[in-house]
Amino acid sequence: MYEDCVKSTEEYYFLCDTEGPWGIVLECLAIIGIVVTVILLLAFLCLIRKIQDCGQWNVLPTQLLFLLGVLGLFSLAFAFIFQFSQQTAPVRYFFFGVLFALCFSCLLAHASHLVKLVRGRVAFSWTTILCIAIGLSLLQTIIAIEYVTLIMTRGMMFVHMTPCQLNVDFVVLLVYVLLLMAITFFVSTATFCGPCENWKPHGRLIFITMLVSIIIWVVWISMLMRGNPQFQQQPRCDDPVICIALVTNAWVFLLLYIIPELCILYRSCKQDCPPQGNACSVPAYQRNFRVENQELSRARDSDGAEEDVALTSYSAADC
Image (tube, rainbow, N blue to C red; front, side, top):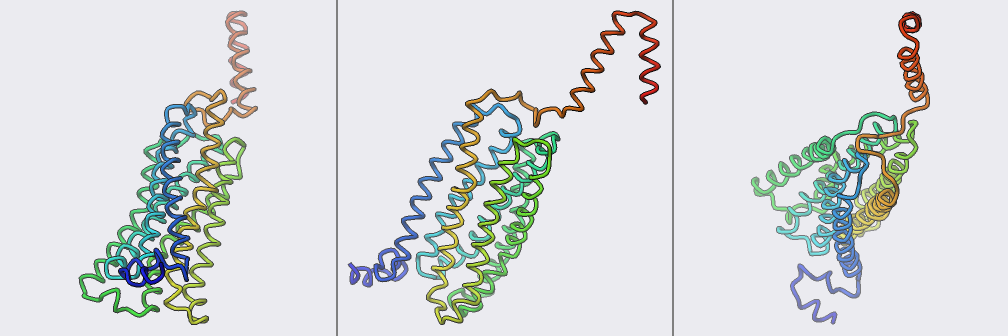
């Protein structure tokens, strides 16, 4: 088995290497992740017609886009399992940042939506949330296109760059993604403050997902820039470090965000949902004010002109 693997094309060596089985393990995890993501996509599509709450329904298109981004991350893992070459290098440098930017932009759009809902304000429309997510991810797309085009047109081949240059460029390309992560994390903390408790579990899911993602990113960037050179494992361990972080973070998105969100949506379908447009129950002081207004209106209708004059004076005094 090992000799057959060595004799095969070097580009696909890690797919069958049993002495360093990281490629085989990550390959299996990525394939399982692709299957699970497709199943979750179908589950969300089935729930679209059953969700009656406007605040929950409006974020569903963005969550579907998020799942497409996660599907892309699992597929991208194979570009890191394959040997580094002039064909796989542009794919790595372009899609890694773009797909993560898309996922974190979707989380940021959802968190911004929740900040309004927990305060009892009117929910964003689904087009607004979707446009926020797509718009925030476009900048990373432009950055990645500029970099890959610059490298390819200047004749500076990826395979001729030193491992240190490759790693520095790879991390610098992700500065905007790191900024998105930081903003999303802090916005998710704002979802804890507000009178509407029923929206706070969604915010906690985003907060935990971002916290774990930040830890993963700190670890893999530290290993790539400092750990591997110090332990003299560069460039041999560079691809495993990035690929492990990629697959791990994609599974974090599924296990800590998407699957719990799906459970919440499924439970809400089983219960009596409020009519569309109701982001939160009306606060007590507003309910009391409405009741008083209704009582005053009834009194005016029954007591005639004298009561009407009294009510007018009462209203003027209040103003």
